[in-house]
Length: 236
Image (tube, rainbow, N blue to C red; front, top):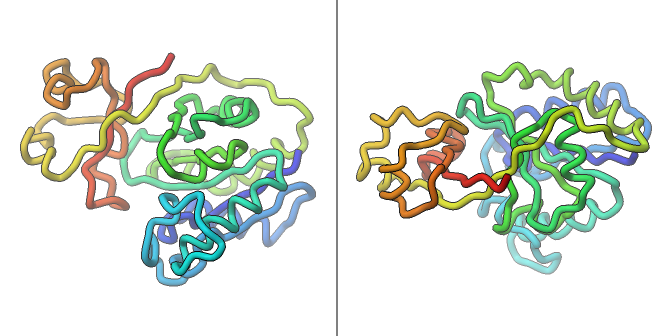
């Protein structure tokens, strides 16, 4: 299986960069790597002008760096069986995967093979929506799976497989609400003790006018201080 590893979609998130460095030191057949936002990586910033992961599908003739880069990454993704796009979050217990709402079966199969049992289906503009073979790997900075050596071995194992056997049963979710800083203050959310993938109260779900049960994600994430977090509903 031919695998592409993407690091630095957000230039200040370390795990993908560290995984790529391991493959640069010791390359492996059928595994290739790419630094997504090289300018942001050099600046140790999330992005330069626009969030690269909100710039898809992009435009090769666009004026902004991220707009052009998004289009070139999508073109690159088509050469591979599966694409792994690495991300980090400060939010604890937030390990999960993202796939697009038209994702190929191999994206779900890969999530199950890699034991990423919580899968969020993205229907908004991001790499997963437009690259149907791409799975974004989201790992908390305090997670045991934050170790790049673990992923180096798992990716090699993945590349050597002709078929994938599920290691876990997947739980699928969809985004239903982005919690703003105004929401945080209006509902006094700091007192709610919100935790990733732990359901919020029925009362709070009604306040947000969303279906209950709803599950938080990215609560208080230092990488996105302009938002307080997000809320999910389960699909299965």
